[in-house]
Image 1 (cartoon, rainbow, N blue to C red):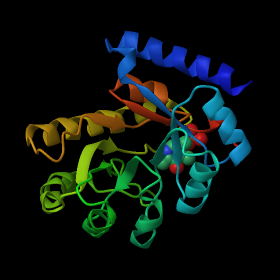
Image 2: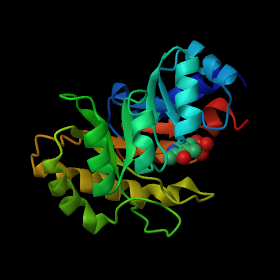
Image 3: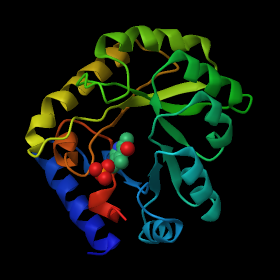
Length: 226
Ligand SMILES: *Cc1c(COP(=O)(O)O)cnc(C)c1O
């Protein structure tokens, strides 16, 4: 199937999930994860009308963004090493993997004076060893610690659920992220409106949308895996 056909199917699924959950489908944005595909194929993604592009590596992502003339809105979704912030910060509009104070400090240092960097705080809701992100109980103290950084603007929370054959099993993790979002919002921090939830991938995006996702990050099901 073409990218356009995949997109239509995914948009329909998102629409149906929103109807089941009493949500406005316009709240849900699709990020096409292009980490598996090359520059040519990524151009096809943009040509299909997709605006949000997700990359998990600094090198590949910066190269693609430059090659494609900075079309699209670029989301950094992978683990981010502090020493690479300088290289990526001008190319990416969103960082989905803020999970430690040292990274916030580096982003704050490298951001252009007076600008805000849109970040998601990544939470390891499942506690799986292999996943990065804060543990649930670390989330609130971490948000408070971000007050010292002028450039950090937290737009939301991000998580990756464990992989299950049956996506229904991911539901508790997405519910938990939603609960954490409400706790953060109750703090009323001016630098952290936290209105977004970045959750749901090819296998589990339908469940994630039912539980409140506003950004789904879809690779395989949308653009293929090579
Ligand atoms: C690769 C990746 C995705 C997309 O995965 P698919 O299963 O191919 O949809 C989403 N989020 C993150 C953080 C990823 O690394």
